[in-house]
Length: 138
Image (cartoon, rainbow, N blue to C red):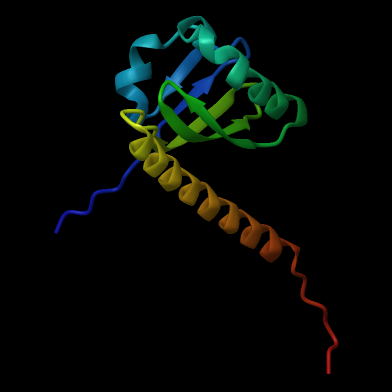
């Protein structure tokens, strides 16, 4: 029996936001763009993504954020690497269906449910990380 493992789309950006590596799940869209500045390729995305990417670099911490772009709502993770590069991975939460108001309402509901599930998981993980074992109890 074959098992299909869904890969997360990802790219690696250098210090100048040039695409230097592309994961297999992002190859079709980003593979032909290797060597190019991601914001030159997608100029209307600059104001949406760059502040988060710069925050990740400035703090040295991974930054996760939800973003609407080009019809899709995505959950983005931007993680700085030791060599100044930035690893960016994303999960598509859904596409907004704008055919009519009912379709829009349904697509927004599905996306919000996914975001709420993500938020619950994040809170649980943070709670687990804050737990400490104290020796010497009764």
